[in-house]
Image (cartoon, rainbow over all chains, first blue to last red; front, side, top):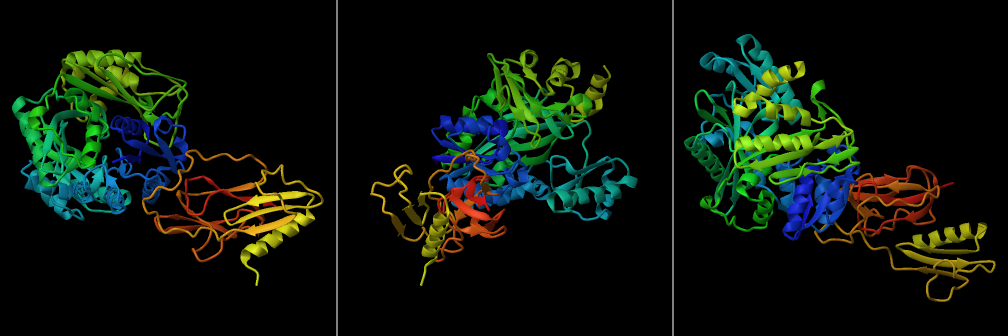
Length: 451
Length: 168
């Protein structure tokens, strides 16, 4: 592998370019017309403009991206996260054109992309799944399931993700309507109206396991991350290790993740997500993400492993070179996602020019960002502008370090979520680890807005 | 029988003759042409090494044939940012997409347009191919083609200048 096309933007493009440089691989960044002046475009070895600002015509334009990779003499494509990173058709097109796709095989992306198929795979691999139906069309089977298992239930799109095509239902009277609405949303978003129904775990925690496989029989995990601080299924804060898992549970959940990765013939970096029912001390398979994730630095901080470098190495055909016993996790890491959004006004996006950008620095502090003073945050894309990641000996020290780092961040010209993160770091519920996936919406935000 | 190239040269010569210019030098993919009249001097026009002939029309071998879909071999790197051309009033036709630039409908056929051709709005100027899908680029205005900015078969980026037209 000599030359990699990076089919992404923002901080992950910068992250992949730097990993390429460290590995002695040339990087070619695909940019939209709006990103010609981006940090990634500045530091990449070469840049190619694949289309106009709207993602549909640039970062989601599969033929243009593959033609750019071929035209620029690349031998591999890194999809980053978001955009085409879990698109089986793109992975297939990349491979069919003789390029290495830095990720799992297209068939595995496809399998895990179907929530129903993924659920069946997880069951076959011995992972616990919440009680639920298979793929259904129409409300009759949903109602039969709810009569047997009771409420609340969750109606989910089979092809779904990111909370789209998902509905919580608490009473029989609402179920048929919710199935219909979720199916319509799923049809519009994914072109597949099929849904399924699961028993909803209330006050659940989100715990996920980083796995890595080389396609040569080696599969390892790098421990778990807890990502229960979410708003509308979008993660805001991630940490490792989880503050509540006991060693026996940790071993179980990590082994389960490795079993699934092995069962589906996984290759590269992947994440197996679970919901954890704290009251029952029971975890259930949620889904598998077949890409590098936004929150991967948390795992890097506690494991000392460069996951993106490992992705490049495995995609180049090298064996993992890591056994499970070689992986030691140390201390505690937390990541806050800083978005250009206004949390006091419904998290509305706040694009514009960053008049000043000074990121915190120091021992145990890492900032992954594509920002600089004078950078114009384009309105076309995701609002993530930086990830602040801290590492310390224990969770309490990590929280203190995060508070200090957030206080040192200077972002002027746009409204960011940084002040909200500071308030979370000071909140007793967060400090004691008494959080769940609805905590932000149900408990934190109403009180924070009232103050 | 006249080839397309020689007929284009004739058109150019006629335009030159009617113009106030006394010297003209043109080089495109298919043609290299140096002419002077009324004691015009070609030496100031980045003239080639050989002495300028009063009238010399030298058709070169036919333009490189379009290659098939990208093969994985890297052609000459294209510039990252869309290069800005001096604003001389010409209409610059830019590529609406990333792809491979072709001047002719097929390798056997002559280019759609050459420098000096008169074009009408809507006339096909070139093709951009992306993963075997061919898109035609049509003239935005009536005028004369004053420049072809890309080599036949090269990769072009989104928004890259392709062809310049001077409005009539």
